[in-house]
Length: 243
Image (tube, rainbow, N blue to C red; front, side):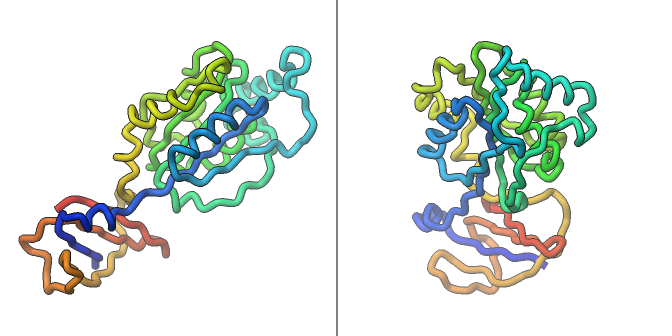
């Protein structure tokens, strides 16, 4: 069975539109990415998780970033083994409540910073079907390998382009770059409705309402929005589409 709530396309549409939830996940050693994410949060509504290494006090920059280089080498040598990834602090979240994930990453030796790779190794498969957007900070190197890391670790993600590359020298003035990027990926448009897994689930039928809030017998010949609610594996999902 299914749930359908139809409303005429009037001013009620904007008042009742459902926005998908966004999660921002990031790691920041020099605080460049932290600064970028802080600015991003002034422009969109999102939950934020900062990844932290379990081992504290490591100077990743010492000896020409020797410690960070060693972590990246370990991952490159055996990317399918959890033991290759540095331990991180436990993260509490419910990924199934988010429609979009923005990954904000610093570049280490051409790759994604190791602690953030750990998080995605642990949770990337749970992001299947979600919209994934990338923000990368680096001193000068290109970001293609960082994006490749994300696609390896989130194999079934729906990656949104373009990616946002902010060089270290641009961080302090990145507000307009972030604003332009949000427009380029049509952030408002792609988060204006809650998406649903493309798999059949249990459905329950309740009622149909018109723009005046009156219950109607059916939705034939009505123009408006259909909000279909799916119940699968004990969890509820919603999808909105134009009628």
